[in-house]
Amino acid sequence: MAHRSLHDLLAEMAADAAVVDEVVRAARAESPEVARLPVGENRRHVAIVLAAGLASFDRQGGAGEQDYAAAAVLGADRAAQGVPLAALLRGVQAGRSRAVEIAVERGKAAGVPDDVMLATLVDFDRNTRALERQVIAGYHEAELELSRTVHDSRARLLRRLLGGGTTAPSAEEVANAGLNPGGRYHCLLSDVGDPYQARVVERRLGATGGVFGLVEGRLAGLAPRLPTPSALGGDVLMVASPAVPLAEVRGTYALCVMALPTAARSRGLHAVADLAVETALAAHPGLAALLEGTLLNALTPGDPFHEQLVSTALAYLDHGRRLDQTAAALHVHANTVRYRLSRLGEITGASLDPPEEDGGAHVRHTVSWWWALRTWRSG
View: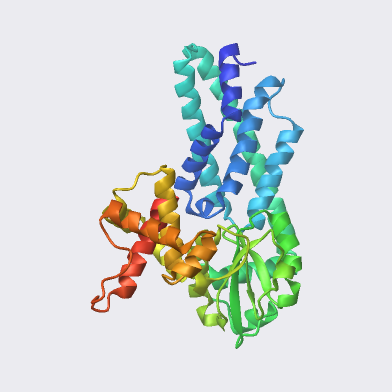
């Protein structure tokens, strides 16, 4: 049993979201493959293993069967998600090392004697290593099971088609997986990372005639037809590319990955083309901050009136600078919209409307304001 104060300290660590986040960051920094998983999956892994390793001090003999079973399930999930075992272990070991560092820092701050801390951390290390062995065992068992299934062979081919750094499959392999080598396919990417939920969503997508699987930790697929909203369901976020030849799907998959965070504000199916502008702008946060500071530096974040002015200006741009349509969308009188836009101009010293002689800069002027306003509002 650990020294009482250290025991309490370790128990607090197990329940501390900030500690879990710190361990997650260490794991993601060490392993790019782990970093490509949704953060929620990383947190689930770290929280379970960390809690089991620390809570094992409450039990004689260390970790128990329940802890081992949870670790084995995590290993199986990573195998199903296509994370290489070596990459998984790099992330796990980096996370364990960071957890030990945090425990040492907190133990010293709490005045725990060095000999007590050393003995306890040796036990902690032994318990977490035992749990890691169960992660590996679960991974290998799932890998063997998955290798026997047609579904897994299709998922592995999908990863070769979409993922970087792998040899493209032959036409025969593509045909054996149920795809037409000469066909055109939409690339679909969702935010679903849990293997069980992925299979549920995949069954909903059967009518698309596509091939689906977990790629870099998220459900992805190639389909000749797009899913209907009713088939996809309102609980799933998915982005879709136009239909392209198989030789081009790797590039469209990369665009889907870039666009997915932009689409995250609402569930359902989103066309990548509809997200193109926002995705391109989101890739340059430094420019966004510079533009916001240039145009809107006089506004005060958190000021209700300034927030109202920004929302009105965005609605004005979104409705083609039409006062009547903007007023209808905001449920106010057109004169109210006119007043708010005037006040925005007075405060910022700049006009939302382009000059009459803009030399063809109308679009640039509009995009600059739209980008600055959105950045200010989200900041």
